[in-house]
Image (cartoon, rainbow, N blue to C red):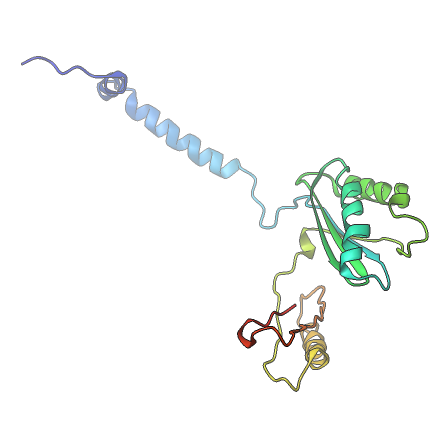
Length: 208
C-alpha cells in the first residue's frame, strides 16, 4: 500500500508528533501564557483621555432655521479645523445653538481644551457683526460626564402640560441628588407641539 502524501501542515504535524520536544514546547507555551496574564497591567477603571466639550451660542429671537444657517453651520466649519477633532455635532433650536466637539481618544485633555478655546475665541468674527449672536459659552466635558441613566417623563392626560412635567422632574431631581455617590443631575424640559390644518386628514396629523 502506497504511503499517503501529506501537505505542508501534514508534514509539520507528523514531525512534531514523533519529536520528543513537543511536550516541552507545549508546557513552555502554557507557562508563557500564564506569565503574560500575570504581568499584564490591569485597572478597574482605566483613565482614558476622551475629551469633549459643549458650546452654547445664544441667538435671541431667531427661529431654528436661522440659528442653523447663521450659527451652527459656520461654527461647525470653524471647529472641524481643530487638530485632533473626531466629530462635531450640532443641535439648533429657536434662540440658541448647541454644538458638541469630540476629540480623538488619546489626545491630552489640557492640550485639547487649549486648542478649542484658541479656535473659538481667535475666530470670533465667524458671525457677522450686528447680527445679534451672543458670546459662545464653552463647557468642557470628559468621560465621567457621560450620563449613566436617562429618565423620560410623559403624560397622556391632555389637562397636564410641560410645566406640570417639569415640576415633577425637578422634584425627582431633588430626591436623586440625595443618593450617595451621585455627581450631576440635570433636567431638560421639552414641549411637544401638535399642529394641523382643516385640510389635514385626522389620521395623518403631524407632530413637531
